[in-house]
View 1 (tube, rainbow, N blue to C red):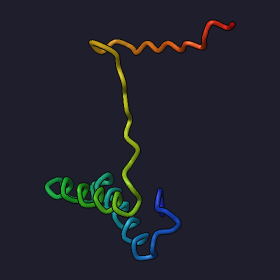
View 2 (cartoon, rainbow, N blue to C red):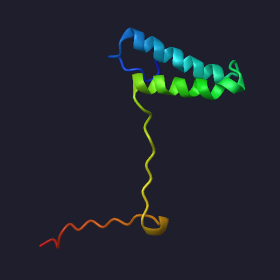
View 3 (tube, helix red, strand yellow):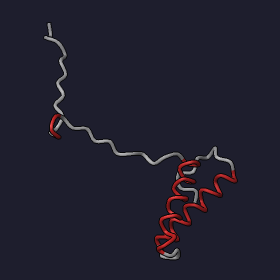
View 4 (cartoon, one colour):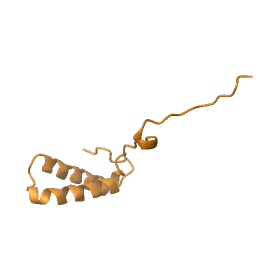
Length: 79
């Protein structure tokens, strides 16, 4: 598998990250009981982030009162 696992990761870390990913798949395919699913997903996420780094987070910026940002670039008077 090795999705997002860095090439520089130790073989044991790669194997653990792959195993964690497989546990996520197990939850998605309902091979994990619903009572354990949250715990399995949390543990798998922690392991994957430790080995692979955190997933990129979406950042949204807005202006005052949630309005769109307005950006002005002044290139000079063109003298």
